[in-house]
Image 1 (cartoon, helix red, strand yellow):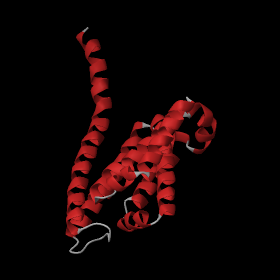
Image 2 (cartoon, rainbow, N blue to C red; image 1 turned 180 degrees about the vertical axis):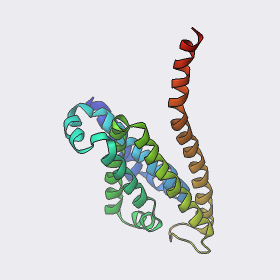
Image 3 (tube, rainbow, N blue to C red; image 1 turned 90 degrees about the horizontal axis):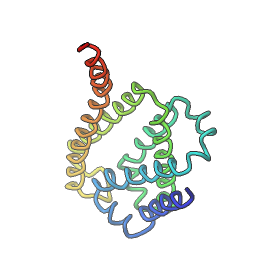
Length: 194
C-alpha cells in the first residue's frame, strides 16, 4: 500500500515540478483539460491507496459525499479561471498550492463517489456541464485574450476543446441517468416471461 501512495505522489510531483509541467501548461487547452484532470486523478489514486487510514475521519466530514463533491466543484471553478491559470504559471508557490488543492479535491472526489447517491452524483455532474459550457462560450466570444500567458488562438482552441469535453461529460451524465432504469427493466424481464 505504501508503494502505491509513493507512486501517486511521484506522479503528482512529475506533473508539477518537471519539464512535463511546462509541456502540459504550454497550451491553454492542455492546461485545463489534461493537467488539471491528471492532478485530480493522482488525488483519487492517493485516496484509494490510503483508504484504510483515513476512512473514519473522512466518513464524519464527507457523509453522503456532499462535502467532497462541493469541494471538488469549488476547486475546479477556481483552478479553471483564466486569472488563476496566469498566476500559476508565474509563481512556484502557486504551483504548489494548485497541486495540493487538486490532489485534495481528487481524493475527496474519489471518496464521494463511493458515498454519494445516484441523484447527488447526477447533480454534481450536471453542475459541471453549465460551468464548462459557459466558460467555453465566454472565451469564444471575447474579442481579446483572457490570459496573458496564452494567445487568442489558444483561447479559441480551448473553447472548442471545452465544448467537446462538455459533450462527452453530457453523454456520461445521460448514461448515469439511464443506467438504473435499464438495469431495473432487465431485472423485470425474466419475471414477466414466467
